[in-house]
Amino acid sequence: MTFADLGLSDQLLRAVIDSGYDVPTPIQKGVIPSVLMGRDIVGIAQTGTGKTAGFVLPMIDILAEGRTRARMPRSLILEPTRELAAQVAENFEKYGKNHKLSMALLIGGVQMGDQVKALEKGVDVLIATPGRLMDLFGRGKIMLNDCSLLVIDEADRMLDMGFIPDIEEICSKLPKTRQTLLFSATMPPPIKKLADKFLTDPKTIEVARPATANINIDQRLVIVPAAKKRDALRHILRDEGFKNAIIFCNKKVTVRELYTSLKRSGFSVGQIQGDMDQSSRIAEFDRFKKDEISVLVASDVAARGLDVKGVSHVINFDVPWQPDDYIHRIGRTGRAGLKGTAITLATPADAEAIASIEKLTGLKIAKVGAPATSAEVVSEAPVEEARPAPRGRKPARDKTRAPAAETPKPVREKAPAPRHEPEVRRDEPDDDEYRPRVETGEDEYRPTVEPKTADDAEPAWNGPVPSFLNFGAG
Image 1 (tube, rainbow, N blue to C red):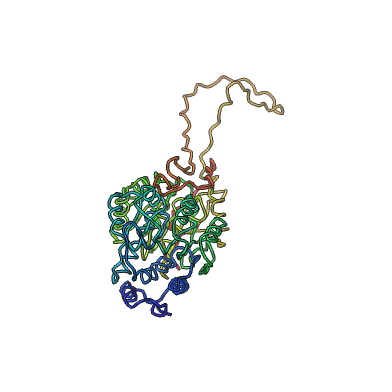
Image 2 (image 1 turned 45 degrees about the horizontal axis):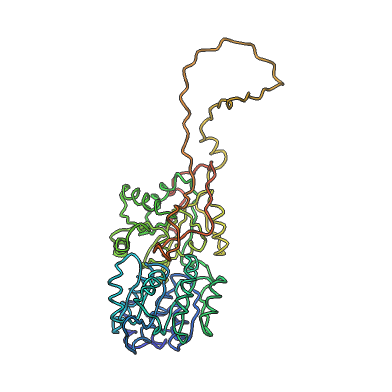
């Protein structure tokens, strides 16, 4: 089956062919004809399956007829993050180049004045994050009573970020006789309830088992002490099979510190994290897309918003706190039928989080390397010096031994203070980092399960990564 078999217009087919595509993905085969027929859709598909083009392409043909009215968009696409909204806007520009459709992008982090001016001229397509849309609606700058087509994208992410109440309010302000398309990687009960309430006799199209990682992604798990993670990462980035990588961290401060460390080590690296303004994020992302840099360090603000062809590696410098985030992180590689490698650097304290990920995906992540054996740990461990008994407490006396004869005490030099290695603990979330974006505009959010701190002691690492990590294979 080709795109020509899906019922798209000739102008649209030319744009698709110019973009280098000729065969639709499974989600596109299922969604496009049904959308063109006016059906409500529930699309269950993981990231990287081509679902964005699945709703963008038919929308362009549907909106080709009709005219715009000031402050009254004809269609609305809701996205959970600024990056995802920008990606959808790029898709409309790419595929709609042969159509005269107007578009506006409502996201936080940019001047509101330009967005208001675009709305006043009238737009065919409005792409928005819920927070900014509700803000402008409350100011009376936008009306939704002429919107005949609604897309709710990444609904499970909306749920995680606390946007479901906003979405329900937005839906209640739209015409009841509209077409609604809802897309989600998973279908938890709140999303099912949302679909039942606001969609009319929807057609469910599922192209992959929910929360299943892409089979084109070679997943690997490297067990390494927290203090050696940067060393392991540098070895991976210097491997022969490495082309480029997106490295994910759980915290903004970790992104900043890792970016600085890799830059000092001579790597061509950029960063995307929540403290950066929108223009800086876009600039860094464009540098990565143009191969001006080969490494992009990112927090989860970018986990679902980056769409780059040919990313060879995704590296989880931190094990994600939520299992769903693992799916969306590694989905940045292995896209459009290409092969990719996902490597997770995990400490022994991450065992519970790894188990949750494996339970969600139904796959056992292949371990590459292992902690040192007990004998190696003992042989490498420093000899522990005798510690004085706590003040006010006498040491226990062995009653089976005879008292030793008193001997003169030799004069000893004062022993140097024992060296203490810094305690290694897993990063915990900043108070200001993970929060819903409804009012703040922040893209990151607080996980529902708080992370646990690492054990005080960890087994030793058994040498450099290249000795056991063959990234060129497979």
